[in-house]
Amino acid sequence: MSRAERLLDLVQLLRRHRRPVSGRRLADELGVSIRTLYRDIVTLQGQGAPIEGEPGLGYVLKPGFMLPPLMFGEDEIEALLLGSGWVADRADGPLALAARDAMAKIVAVLPPDLTRRVEEAVLMVGPGRPLADMMQIDLALVRRTIRAERKALIAYGDGEGRMSERLVWPLALSFFDHVRILIAWCELRQDFRHFRADRIGRFEPSETRYPQRRAALLKNWREQEGVPSPR
Amino acid sequence: MSRAERLLDLVQLLRRHRRPVSGRRLADELGVSIRTLYRDIVTLQGQGAPIEGEPGLGYVLKPGFMLPPLMFGEDEIEALLLGSGWVADRADGPLALAARDAMAKIVAVLPPDLTRRVEEAVLMVGPGRPLADMMQIDLALVRRTIRAERKALIAYGDGEGRMSERLVWPLALSFFDHVRILIAWCELRQDFRHFRADRIGRFEPSETRYPQRRAALLKNWREQEGVPSPR
DNA sequence: CAGATGCTGCCAATTTCCGGCAGCGTCTGT
DNA sequence: ACAGACGCTGCCGGAAATTGGCAGCATCTG
Image (cartoon, rainbow over all chains, first blue to last red; front, side, top):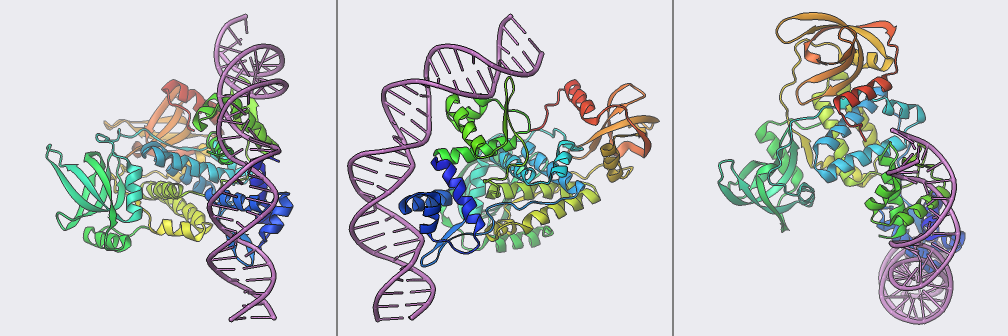
């Protein structure tokens, strides 16, 4: 049996057991040495499988590796398709791809009759105004920086050709019809500022984290701007 | 990239596309020779994946294959949140509600660490131009009529005050930044027509179904308008 | 029919995989 | 506190799988 097949078998094996299973047993069932089994576990973990090894006990696959079958109403499917379609159409490359991947995964666990609904989708996303994308910074990098709660140095053009450099604390990315806005705390102005992504010339994440929690800053921003909290 | 990872990538690549994809393209995306791709396909089929290869066309993954990777990545969660947020913000009442409900169902099955991502969402939907909604027809009714493939009688204003009544075959609803367009076959003009939803004064579903399949009509429409098929 | 695509066999070079050993850390139960 | 069970890592050499290229045939679309 090839290694690739064995790894899939191992996942299924773990899914079958709720209690921890010792590596020894897993290795036996797969017909492989214990050393190889350890390597396989590492590989699977590397692929994102939440396998936990507890010394003295064995391995368990924590819930959340597989998506359970999902049941949706007709409108709900349509809403998801429409929404992910919009992201796939209007977001930057990696995020657009993520939208398609996510939708594909949802479809994969849909009961058959709902799959039909997907193919017969009634709603579509019309082509929008072309996105302003002059400077083309890497938005995926911006997202990672926001998640990491790190400061960043940006070069920003104010629309009349004046460029300035600022150290900011990136908080969120807001999607408008044809621009995206970076919401951040600006160290220069000591206040919240909004930066059009298309006017950011450089975006350089720094190593230093900013000194407050992002959630708290966002809450302040919401209050100051009068933006209601979502959901 | 190890073969094991590549095989999982291949599954997801296939899941993403509904139409057949040629082996050449798959091989390129995976960064591997076509020969190797063929072997990978055989391996996956050996694991029970219902992959069908059609000469002259390409490969399709038929529904019903539930193997990893089937949990959302971080970007995928963000993409779903952003998309459903857009629908919740910009669509009509029932559909907006459906978007929220669907997202809630997804969040409910997420493992704890991904739930955190939801709470700390980095992306948001900015307020858009207010939607044109003069006439306020019931879009939910329009959706049901489209699904039922029934004719409808509409009263339409052309923007200069002239109203006309037409019998149309509603095919789809297209969402633009601040208008929604009903795509339909117009019996009066014997051609496809686009109607701004905000200019439709009355929408009365009829009992009679239209004589062709919606899917076929939509395909014609796509060809005529040069709209590429989604996914 | 031509063109695109799927599919198979063969082969040599390369990569990886594997098992065994040795040793360390961590948790459980006594 | 201790023993035992287990997880985990580094190293090594031989074995096995993987890979890409080539050549050729089959099948479907237009």
